Length: 544
Ligand SMILES: [Zn+2]
Image 1 (tube, rainbow, N blue to C red):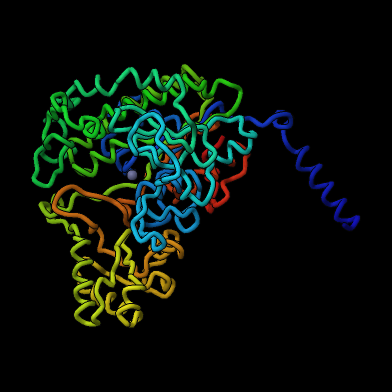
Image 2 (cartoon, rainbow, N blue to C red):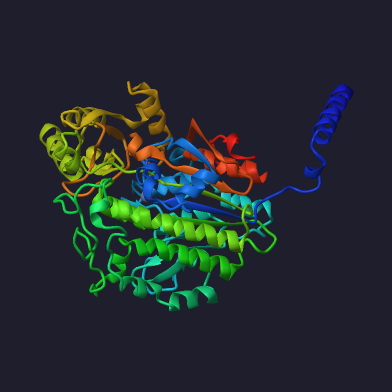
């Protein structure tokens, strides 16, 4: 190293260190706990759609005292639950973190795989199979892993959600625990990936059987039903139902005896119970009160169940958000008391949004529809058979991608290239399909750059299918009832992102930010390494 360079580096170090205020020299300031709150299927517009009847202390408090990134977009497609939770906590996208859907087709196994499945582990806390899950399919680490690494594993990290994928992915690989809800016991379980026995505090919490208490109450509207002016009428043929019940208020759940815990997922009490569990975890593990920065990752699942069944224009969704707002207010008050105002860093976001119910749109002369994917698959296979004499050339359709069966085509001495070209032409005959192309030729296809980037970010050469197809806006895989999400469009990809508490200034930005920016922003605020697959950018405006 030349002498000049040494002088230069010395000067740089000297000037950098001594330009900082004295208070920053001796210690790095961090919050006592970080609380991540992901609301499953919460569209950004729900912050404002129901604003007038939110309390001052829930969503409104976060918006008033915190920092809102008003244009936060998901940077990839498909926009499903597992990729969403993975992106928030890894700062990464499916192409890098390997979570390309909730489910995808495995050519190696010859079947669909579930993102969290892991047959090498056992359920802890129940005799069901619901605990045979782990983060092993996640290729990257998470901000929660980086927090553990940064503190030499003194920081505790725990994930909580009714859905296993809403709990496991946020908690990362090195988590102390991830807990999810078990329908057979009505309590919280985990897997042997994390531990051999539930902690004593959780056994006593499960023993309280709170879901049984909650299920004794029927679900009626918080306000008189006539005042739900942001929603369409209560009963519609295109509405799904609360499991085991029907589609109108009051939802009589107190008399349901069979599979009652399945029904529980569709009620606002499931959200309240998730916050009960969050409080019990903080108490049981002494999170945020041990002199280390801990991380509690909470995901709210019932919003997704009710959203799928009833859609964004339903009284059910409106009422659920009004009640969730009250739960959120109580939880923030609890954190103020337990951890201290300004001592915890919280963020609220969502894993994806949702489309309107197509039948509701049709009723109002708006375009859209549900596409019957199994029917498309049958049609494609019949057409290929007639034209080329190859049976079952399409083996699977997942995440709007066609997986062809190379072996079936080879065995029947078919020309794979010609068959795939033929499939693309067949796909384009469907009214709802605008574009179909070879997945690995994406850079050559004439689709707008923004959509192209989202598709590239969602594509894995190892895991994805052969042919991608794109729908017209407001079309998706589905039937005549309910709705879903999973595409590139803004209703699916525009999510809330509100920061609150420690070191967060009050304000907002309309600058476009991304779901993948959340993890690197936390890393920057904490002065720790960003996750190992992160491609997000720090949202500098958030911090004071
Ligand atoms: Zn979801």
